[in-house]
Image (cartoon, rainbow, N blue to C red):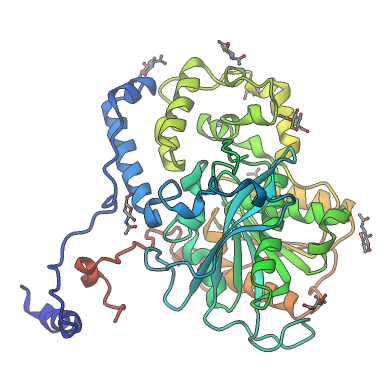
Length: 494
Ligand SMILES: *[C@@H]1O[C@H](CO)[C@@H](O)[C@H](O)[C@H]1NC(C)=O
Ligand SMILES: *[C@@H]1O[C@H](CO)[C@@H](O)[C@H](O)[C@H]1NC(C)=O
Ligand SMILES: *[C@@H]1O[C@H](CO)[C@@H](O)[C@H](O)[C@H]1NC(C)=O
Ligand SMILES: *[C@@H]1O[C@H](CO)[C@@H](O)[C@H](O)[C@H]1NC(C)=O
Ligand SMILES: *[C@@H]1O[C@H](CO)[C@@H](O)[C@H](O)[C@H]1NC(C)=O
Ligand SMILES: *[C@@H]1O[C@H](CO)[C@@H](O)[C@H](O)[C@H]1NC(C)=O
Ligand SMILES: *[C@@H]1O[C@H](CO)[C@@H](O)[C@H](O)[C@H]1NC(C)=O
Ligand SMILES: *[C@@H]1O[C@H](CO)[C@@H](O)[C@H](O)[C@H]1NC(C)=O
């Protein structure tokens, strides 16, 4: 053993030995430690995969599965509602069906001194069918203390609520952030909010988490259908407030990114319609932070992206057939993706450029035009105020597209909408860059301060140091190391 390590090891082992336990020897950790997934030969053939690609998909899948707390949504009984007696099936959206008041945080990599709850609640899909969905609540240690005029908030007794609508995290049950050790967005958003004193109410979106209804029917994730996601969010808020009336404020700010940016924008449009069905949640609405929202969904038209939308599109358009958009090879790859319930990174590996998977005229179909109406937010009345944050170097959501949609929307419809540009900001890194701005904006809404400038505003967030000296993209993530043989990786866990 290297001598300089000895005092440290003695300290760590000393703590363990003092409890009368034998400390396991430190072992090497792998990122795929909790899974031994391997594609079968039939699956390799179905996807027309080379053996190199099959190995890549095995590696990614074992990583993905090792990121799941309690073995993920299929193994964690929390996500199973099929034993719910018929007499207890909900009859309206926004009702808690299952309440896990205190989630065991040990299999999660949430920050020390944050706590978690999870709920399964009723919501509606794009066609109005009542279905279950899951959500987590991430709790602060110390609730943010607000002064000002904030209603129903005596210092620290309840935590101000941010309703967080996440971006693309998956397409199947295990894509649910509430089953991901780091809640998928980790310190980018939920940890940052909780550590700033907010309670983060975070819908998984239907089909992610709970994928089978109380009646045994399958629940697909209606990817990119913005109002389906918005209903999931508003119903999660209702259910959470009903289950934790003392701990959550009625007031809330919505924040969303990417797929969830479109969801958050769609939510402002639902509230902007003043429908009586959402009158209850309109009262506490204080505004929305929308980061990198896709407002032109089919600007991306890779086979993988279209597969996520198409794989369950017949639930919305019963006459839709995968062969309307995909070649036979593409259809087979979707079958394989469904079999392995592949993640985003698995999809990218599976839908390579080797052979065409998409029909050349997919975008001329009626389904494509109709789906754009379900996907793209903007150019409609909305409930403000809204802060849109957009990186100018975002490869996924073009800055110009967001700028055009914002300009069209707020010139045509009255309301406060600010576009904050992050120079050279990328799809996720814009969130890091603008953290102080959006945290301050959220705080100001809870303090009932007027927005700095009314109406259609554009601003730019310049960096403090020359922009090229900053880390451009992240190159690390919170790796769960909760077994004692890995305690040497956690010198800050004493
Ligand atoms: C399978 O992939 C190979 C390249 O690895 C390609 O040449 C072939 O055309 C593909 N087969 C089909 C049915 O598309
Ligand atoms: C590892 O996976 C198994 C089986 O999927 C699961 O039961 C277990 O909870 C997981 N371990 C941890 C520490 O999450
Ligand atoms: C404050 O709380 C009470 C009781 O919980 C509720 O009836 C009232 O509507 C709330 N007021 C506001 C402005 O949210
Ligand atoms: C919704 O209601 C508010 C308050 O009653 C009103 O100011 C606003 O103009 C209404 N919006 C629409 C689109 O009807
Ligand atoms: C769902 O709603 C869409 C759009 O309103 C409609 O075209 C479709 O027929 C409905 N699908 C089912 C299965 O009811
Ligand atoms: C979908 O299209 C394929 C290929 O054209 C066809 O074989 C299949 O029967 C169609 N499925 C349905 C449900 O119409
Ligand atoms: C469909 O895509 C093709 C090729 O990218 C393009 O030339 C065509 O204009 C598109 N059609 C529509 C209706 O967008
Ligand atoms: C964005 O729009 C500006 C001004 O309209 C134009 O100069 C620029 O070339 C556009 N950039 C891209 C990437 O389309």
